[in-house]
Image (cartoon, rainbow, N blue to C red; front, side, top):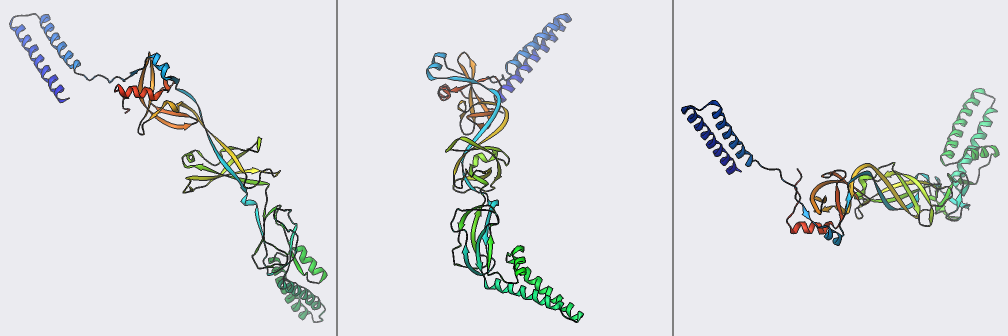
Length: 399
């Protein structure tokens, strides 16, 4: 480059010198102004021609020739780069689980013994308010007796002749009654049971525990005659009117997954039936071994068709809008560059570097390097690339 610049500079100086010399000679020999102008124009034309000859030309795009008969032999097909709506389908397998917001645990807050067991097997359906067990507790019995005695004490206080003493005794009786009632309520004695005790003026031997929800008994620890301690779990009850579906999403698919995306859920044993749902939750952490994150969907299950631990098929469709796309098979990925072979007509193909974006359903978004309507080789690309390598044809670098 330096030699070219020096050569152009020397040639220019030499021609300018010749022009000046001719101009001086013309003046000394009495040449006319028009003749002098011809000499000057001639010198400038030579300078311009020399400078133009050394200007760098634009680099032409290289091509490789594949005759039409050879294209048919190797199965070359071309497709047009078009702008179409791009949609990605993510398919995965889900598992039906209990809706954790509809799980209930039944336990007792007192020490005692199970005297009567109403629900005696796992899997039984129970309704809200249905009795589950009856527990005898000496402490509960004693507290009821204390409440009854306080009520009798209050009744006797009213018969006291001294009004001041009567008010004092009534006030103390009310405090004891309120404390006994509060203690029984904290042990889950219902208002109806309390009214019964106060009406008959006799303690109830056992405490009946009722179901807090509608659902199925999924775990039963209660056994007839067993001793129970405060806080000990007796039953787990699950309401299956709504169930969760838990699925795994691979790490490379997570950028497309968001809460609220619609999903279609189907089961192999119900081929004609599909359930619609939406992604409710995306787990913020990955499983170390599988490199997946869990997502959660909810389904209404009024007929109890979906049972926990069933497997389901999940399809999530994500629309990206119109994009310039080409088939994935038309791209040769070298690891650092993505190359396509553009059909230039008459058997010529131009290797061109492109910039790609989204990938979905065997199609790839082209962000730079191609225009809509240009045709690229979609099959036989590796054979075209091999021919280009043999002939030393390489794509131009994109800047």
